[in-house]
Length: 161
Image 1 (spheres, rainbow, N blue to C red):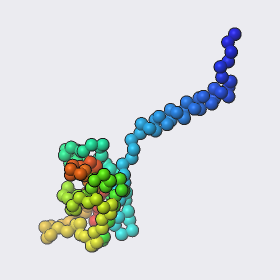
Image 2 (spheres, rainbow, N blue to C red; image 1 turned 135 degrees about the horizontal axis):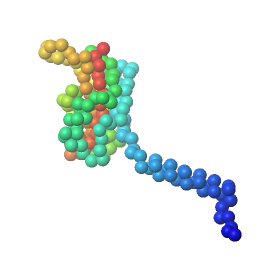
Image 3 (cartoon, rainbow, N blue to C red; image 1 turned 90 degrees about the vertical axis):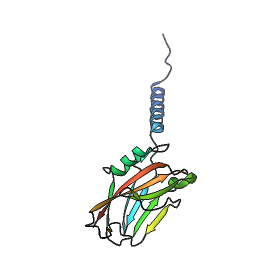
């Protein structure tokens, strides 16, 4: 005859411990979420994680793809003359990193190490007399490293109300 190594209660304890260990192992394999960036107009705010990010710099082709692919972009309404506020979590600007705002593929700010920027009375839809304003524009926040190379991109759709 063989002696029982574990009682019924002991087997359940070992099984539970194994399940917890497996769960922790799976969680440790998950990607850490990227920091949030927020766009605020008036009392409305939208926050999102980066649509593109890498532990290293993004290639220029990847950046262009991220700036034009707006399928996951959050939308915020904007009225002419509203104050536009942009904010990023502190992780975005740590270790010498900076960020800048890009509107329809064109930078509209210099890279900044601040976590917040405000643009009172900005008219994102000004055409300078060059025809009718579009109904929406693509707004991106681009994180850059100390060397100015892009590291992450957040995407928003700004809709003229």
